[in-house]
Structure formats: structure tokens, C-alpha cells
Length: 56
Image 1: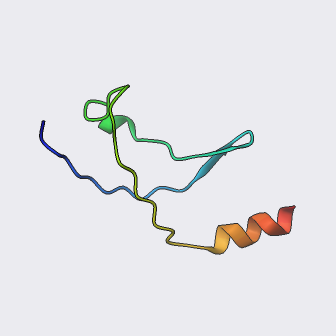
Image 2 (image 1 turned 90 degrees about the vertical axis):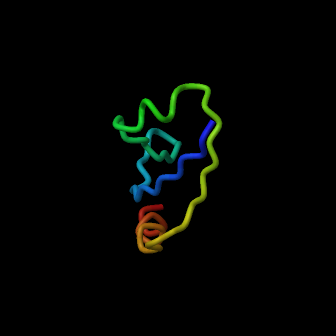
């Protein structure tokens, strides 16, 4: 199996008490249920964290 590498930039969404990264539907064929993937997270903007602290 070939290693496919893609880079996507996403905003973290919130669903209830969970924070989520939503995978785009156009990657459905590459990322089937049960696929093992490696996720590397790089924070590009620390401003949302400060806004969240103000809301608490």
C-alpha cells in the first residue's frame, strides 16, 4: 500500500464537550472507516484559546 500524504488546514469545531477536526468528504475514498492514519497537529493561531478563556 502506498503512503499518501496530504495537508489540510482546518478550524477546530466544537460538538458538546468535545473539540473536533472534521475530515472533508472528498477524502472519503482515501480515508475509509478503520483506516490507520497518523495525525500531526500544528497550531497556526493561538488567538481562539484566549477568546475561550474569556468566555469561562
